[in-house]
Each structure stands twice: as C-alpha cells, then as structure tokens.
Length: 240
Image (cartoon, rainbow, N blue to C red; front, side, top):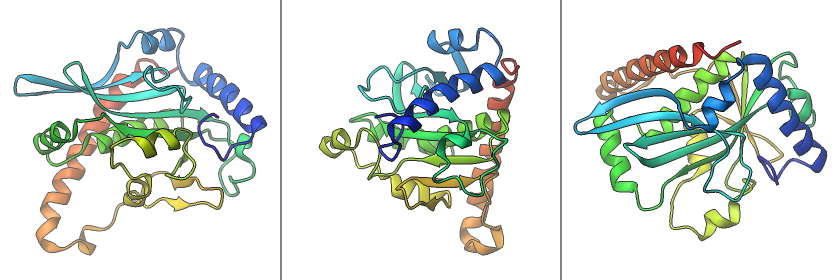
C-alpha cells in the first residue's frame, strides 16, 4: 500500500511518480540530498536547556509502511516527538475524488500523523512552553508553508479507517485520532474515506469565539503566523 488504502494499484504508482516530478519541478538540485541527510531544519527554538526544532526528512525510517515520500519531524534535542508524512501528487492521479480541485495545482497528500510512544508527558510540556501549541499542530503549520511554496490549493489526508498502518496503530497504546485532528481544521470527509482541505484554511472569526478565549486564540494565531514565516524563509533558498 502507498499513502492510503483507498488508492488502487495504478493510482499508487502514478502518485509515487508524480511526487518526484513535482519535487524536481519546484525545488533546486541538492534539495533531496539535504533532506536525506536529515539536515534541512525549517524552524527551531530554545526551550530552557533543550532545543525544539522541525526538520524535513525523507521516508520515515522507523515505519515499514510507505506513508509519504517526505516526513516533517518535530524533535526535542535528539528525540522525535511527532512525525507527519506526505507526498506531493498531481490531482489527475486522483481523478475519482478530486472533482472541483484545480488541475493546474499539485495537491499535498498526508499519509501519516503519529506521535512517539511514551512521549505524551513530554509533548504536553513542550506544548505548554510553546503557548499551548501542540507539536502536531506546528507540523501542520510547516506543511501549510510547504503547500504554499509549491502553489498547492488542496490537502488530502488519510483517516483512522484507511491509513496504510491502520493495523499497527490499532495494536499500539497511542490515542491519536485522525478524525479529531482533521475536524479541528475543518476538513471535509470524502466518500473514499480520505479527508479534503481547501487552502488557504479559513479561521473562525474571533467574534464567534467565547470572549474569555479570544486573547489566547489570537496569541496562538500570531505565534503560528510567525513560525510559518520562519518555515517559509528556511524553505525559500531551496525553491527552484
């Protein structure tokens, strides 16, 4: 399986092929070498005696499954706390489910979002030090920056039912829910079991948020915007 259990054999082959075509189109030579050397840092921040950072890597080294050709990793020092794997895909590859998606723009397909086993207490601590922004949400900030860089207008993602590592996840002690994660971003759940997000994301007006939470919400949005700008700056030097 590749990316999602909803893809048939032809779609999987074309998705894999289109990813590398799009990478070669949008990024400079040397980009993948830097990625595979685990040396492409998109953002970092000191948290006391520790260093938090987001890196762009290749295929997830720990997984036996091919859930995306690129992986965003959130690390605290040398410990990986969260990963998000994805591929860039030509929309024509998914003609069955991309009605209304601009055919001239690539789409981003997320095949995996997963936290490290036994790291929940550390994840909560890091989130509190980053203004209550969780590592998985910071990875989404970085992903949105990558999507903008390649002019993507749509994100597709797997769900609890159709991710290719579903049976491994069911056996794991983790409690991550794809449904809850995507609902937070206002994703549309598709008939094939994937989710679809139109870009740019639409944020709920502050006036629709309870008054006691508006200040906190605004601070989180400003922090995410700043991180997004840093990611864009780090990525810009590799754009073709």
